[in-house]
Image (cartoon, rainbow, N blue to C red; front, side):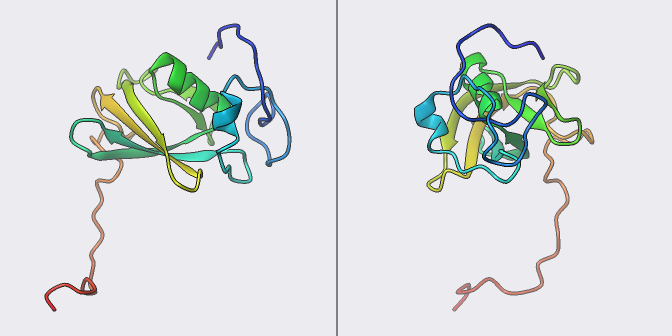
Length: 146
């Protein structure tokens, strides 16, 4: 995806995509925000995505510093595709857009909570949410009923 011209700052993965932490690629993310992120070995942070008005969990994506910058400044959810090794804006190919209402950083700095208005389905399988497969829980809930 083309990136508008703007000054870039901070450490970030390579121009072709995330690489192990410690390598540098310029990013336009606010350095104060970038300093709070704890990235994985590929320079990524998990982004848990929920519907802003219902709290429904829709999907999990991955963001590097530039994807987070684009998400914060465009209002469109932008991710790093680990399989395609490129940025993708949710909905650009599917039409199932995510319009960002807010982004919160968790207390450890290793995950983001992205609240969106989801247009259409969130999952590539055609389901509303990626969490459509319930697993059986056979153990009791600790403290329940006692």
